[in-house]
Image: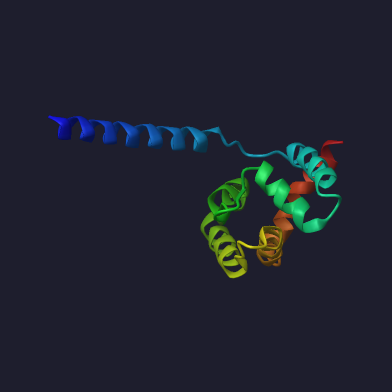
Length: 137
């Protein structure tokens, strides 16, 4: 009888954990250029205008980065889904994330992985995305 109770408790905990993970994942929304610029300004002030800490702060605020696993390639690909190259973009982001991974220097990891990933076509997409804000003005 106690074994059955323990099993029910374990399954209940598992379901609660799964539900909370799904809820956290569903809360994330695609960022707009306006949101990025606002977060960027806050991050610049917090990091005293230094590039690597500013970038890490920004991508954390956007929900695109965790200190444990780096960039979330799937979320980044969703932002640029209109280019119809989600799988390729995810591969590039994942490759750069692994290549530059350095958990003892998180700011550098974020910055170097970003530079790696944006050195090609993705870099042009980022510039186009950010220029949307300038068009809105």
